[in-house]
Image (cartoon, rainbow, N blue to C red; front, side, top):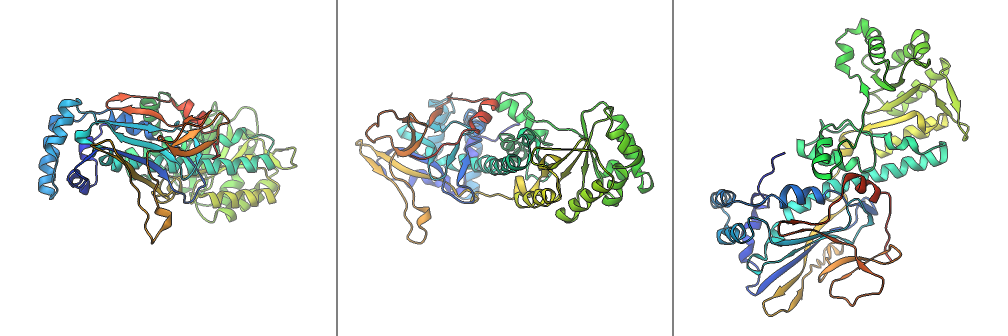
Length: 467
């Protein structure tokens, strides 16, 4: 995926800022923080992508010339000499040091997640320039955090109403590629979701994960029909299509079929009775996933389960005295949100069915119903160094919104020997048994600590807390 040059990735007003700082500033220090919002914990995710795809993509003479011409026409001043200095002195790599907590870590809000520090006094302002680019880490982190919250909810249901948590990894399926705002955002959001789950229909993100996180196939899907493959047979031949689908993919362990093209209840009756039922419940055919895709989710699921009862669909009883259908499942993929998932599971449990019988496909809510304020993301300058070596703490403290008060100094996050975190400063006196939790991930064209996707997933299974 070809990326634009870093020199063209900032907000317009950023180009005018080199001349706005005090004349004696030689170094700048910023930090990244999720200040709160919808979740009390966030799953830090995506910084490695932005480092590899953008920071490790050096600026060229051509990039500077193009951006300079564009800025002039756009009405913004452009530090041509500064950018050309970066090209010539640093071979096009930004002279900044980026640190980041381990990718995938589950941490409380209101802690420094990453820091950006300039390393060349002649172009110290680059630390602030990359805010626009690196702020975009809010998106994968927010998607990962949302998926984490859903995973924890589903695990809670499984612990209470199922015999195993094994099925949870495939219960929240990503249907969001087509609803994403771009090919890149689909890949980024799809990757973030897979930090918590293994099921996805976002094929695009698999290459993305392989390219930037070194795991070849991080997610899985199943053979499934859609409305066009059903309705192309004509209304009178809906069940011929389903039979064809079942026979064609007989050797598969599991297949899914959309059943609401015309009459969800009639289709449910048909596939849970007669010859369909005999085949599906035999050992010769795959598990059959019924997919409703319209209407009120609770009402539709209630009707489908009543039909399953009437048709004596085979089931076992788990240790919680709830039914687990032997060869049928239901996946609901329309209008799914965490709240709707809970409603569906609650009504199913009240009817005697375990959570194991269900999976959920989420697209728009998962991938698009988020924004930078969902977790209140911000990047703020907290320290500058002057030419005489003096450090000046930098902060904002608006009287109209105390929640936007920023941190002072060269702030970072420390971890102690017990694995607990503390927010402090690099200039604090060292506390025995502590080390900085953040690691260098980029330093002037040198790639620092990296993680493969298996390591990111493993990190996201451990929660950290503040001292």
